[in-house]
Amino acid sequence: MNTKKGISSLTYKQLAEHHTPSRTIWRNTIRAFVVGGAICLLGQFVQILFIRYAHFSISDAGNPTVAVMVLLSVIATAFGIYDRFAQWAGAGSAVPVTGFANTMAAAALEYKSEGWIGGVGGNMFKLAGPVVVYGVVSAFFVALIHYIIIHL
Image (cartoon, rainbow, N blue to C red):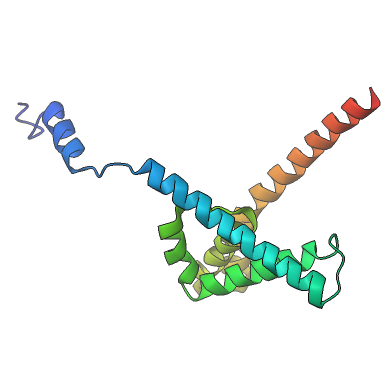
């Protein structure tokens, strides 16, 4: 035992392993799959409502569906519901549209005390900037590969 540090690294490692909760990877994976699927099912239901009752075409119903899903996610974030839900749901709550909207809204709420421009706007776009850049760069490379495959 090293008297300067208190306990040996081996003893500390054994102690840490004893107190570390076991990983429930299968339960978390199934929960994420079911929750992510349920969010997508809700989105599909919203899209069907736009098609059936607002007489949108299938292709035109996509944009308002995304807007409704973003709105629902932001409202749930504002009331603290989405964060509690995400804690339970895990990765399933990170379905791209709702997860991104939650992250943006959470950043806005966290920094609102710093003002609208520097706090809300600045911190929301610290998060959104890299996402937009990687999205545009990825789209460029996918389009380039598609062009090469089709035209060569």
